[in-house]
Length: 146
Ligand code: TYD
Image (cartoon, rainbow, N blue to C red):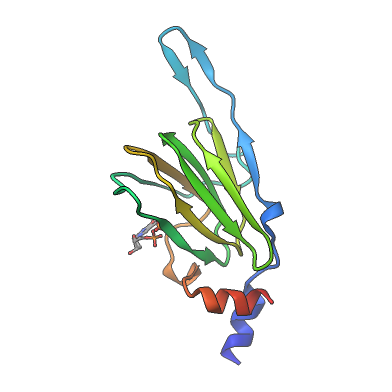
């Protein structure tokens, strides 16, 4: 019965519902500025920002899915790969520009891998932190996506 309730909360999104969003940059000879504004540049309202940094060589992050959270992820510095999985399709997205980000919809397994030395992964999120929104068991994820 509990499983049934959880099942109803995990949506049927696929990796093809995620998209790269190329944000413009304001260039000058002294450098670039990129602006992200709620209601203008992103498909959701940002409620939280966090970033990953000082990631040791060879370490991976992520390894979970979200029930409701949407995210916009980009490399503020350096590069990394985002691996998305919807239970059927796998997609690998390389991020290496501060003005090119990946919009990740809820209901997908994600792993962040291959961080370059000194890279910074910025994440803009649609919700405040809530551990109940995480699905961290891969086998449970596969079962719920069927
Ligand atoms: P987690 O989201 O599992 O990291 P990642 O997906 O990048 O590998 O979070 C790692 C730890 O940080 C975990 O104990 C939860 C905590 N955390 C917060 O307290 N608040 C937050 O906003 C985030 C993203 C994580």
